Image 1 (tube, rainbow, N blue to C red):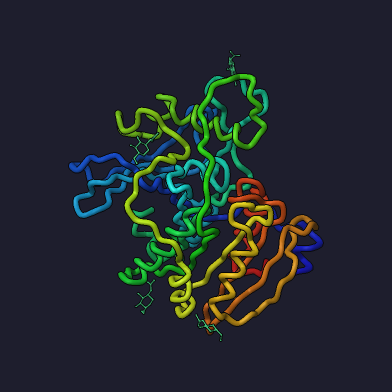
Image 2: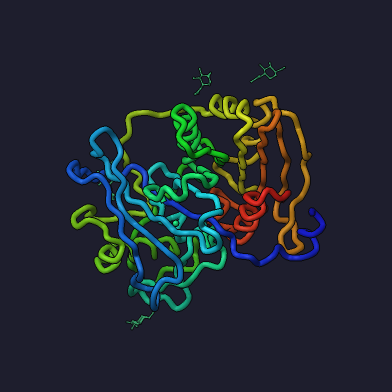
Length: 348
Ligand SMILES: *[C@@H]1O[C@H](CO)[C@@H](O)[C@H](O)[C@H]1NC(C)=O
Ligand SMILES: *[C@@H]1O[C@H](CO)[C@@H](O)[C@H](O)[C@H]1NC(C)=O
Ligand SMILES: *[C@@H]1O[C@H](CO)[C@@H](O)[C@H](O)[C@H]1NC(C)=O
Ligand SMILES: *[C@@H]1O[C@H](CO)[C@@H](O)[C@H](O)[C@H]1NC(C)=O
């Protein structure tokens, strides 16, 4: 299997995942409305109908649904009834799911070339992890994975522990976290035409221009007045609790044979270095299965990987070569290939 990956490019089959992206920490408070969902057929910036099924809406949380979370749901373009359902949480804390949607795993991305300051144009992302739902019980038996990058490394284990504590029909098969903590740039939304949109930070400015456009908000069915000004990452979130370590959660998960985990880290991540991540994984006292070796994409070393086990529990640690913090922002193609193989239970 390994040599197959080494000598030929991975089959170009589109990865098939249903992707549910949730904006955490939405501060919108509309107690009288519980939830809502709309099918989005077109989006400003994209010519014609979207060639994938997309739904947006609000999910109420809390006893009175007083907090309303905005979500994006994209149906797998392969076999939605069979493909895993991924709940994808963005980091920060305070980053929008649009960060993952446009820059990591979603079906659309911005066109930077020739960008002139008007409403950004969209194209299909060849490296999307989708190829559809919470209130769609037909997906309840699909494997479910909870995924997040960066600061979500703190939140994902709590979500999984909560699901384990209150089991539903759905089994959580997977959990992945990247880092304990990070500082995300406070991206400035600025309209200076001289800025270099090829630079990563400025590429992200396009998300702000797009998402603050009223026609876009109408197409996404964002409630009127919900946001005065949208920011990709809101770094001034007020929260009351901070968890300094989630290693204890991972220890508990390792005792559950129905779980599997993928922890990946860009090897150029200077805020949460992969060597530190590997160190805490080693404190879990798991047994080394597959030992440290390179993994390949298109005949090139794409990073290193090793596997840890405890009974039927498996934890794969993967580095992504040349990836910075939030590896998929830098190495979208490699991360897509990694996810594709891992979800299919192939060795990397
Ligand atoms: C900017 O580019 C868009 C197409 O991407 C075009 O429709 C629009 O006319 C251009 N605006 C200016 C001021 O050049
Ligand atoms: C950021 O979050 C705070 C609440 O923690 C809110 O008051 C503020 O309006 C938000 N800013 C943006 C730009 O969303
Ligand atoms: C780990 O599991 C033990 C035993 O079930 C439980 O008491 C403890 O609260 C769990 N730890 C966390 C962090 O949830
Ligand atoms: C791991 O093993 C070390 C050395 O045997 C021991 O001190 C430590 O308590 C163990 N940790 C866990 C989580 O079992």
